[in-house]
Image: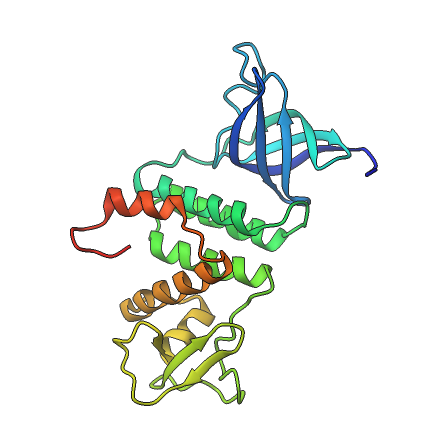
Length: 246
């Protein structure tokens, strides 16, 4: 049996909640020092509960919990009070980030660098920064933390530095492979410039932004095992232009 522990004032965010029994909630949270944790918020659905209204997504919180099993007992949640609420497309982008963390992160594995990337992405979304750039940077940080980091400066087979004018197919778990006879209109091909820009976190070039979106979508779908993301489907239904693919 795992030893009981008490954690106080742990920075964290709520990723997802769902009802548990008559008056309680199950809370999936992402914390700084403990990674993704499952918490039982007993009585949180009662009108008089101190937790009621605190357990909202995208709000930076201080969390207290105790317990020794897979599901801990949430004792207190205190809002840090420094981030505007998300709305519109930014809100759906936030749900996309949360869904990725829920699907891909194991429980109770610390990821402080990913926590910082998540907080930075939410900050940018809340203040109206370009959403596509924020999402690409977060996706790269997520894959890096999960051990699936991309090699974005050299060919996967040879180690030869990438050529900005080269055309490359990015092969999962192999890296960039120089290709001949395929143009950039092929969905599996990206320019060397795009890969180099991604390695620097520079998405100002529209071609880089467009190609990186397709590449990251393919990689993430692979690591999701082909599971569809509900947040992506909803975003597409609400905001995609007629005829635009998801």
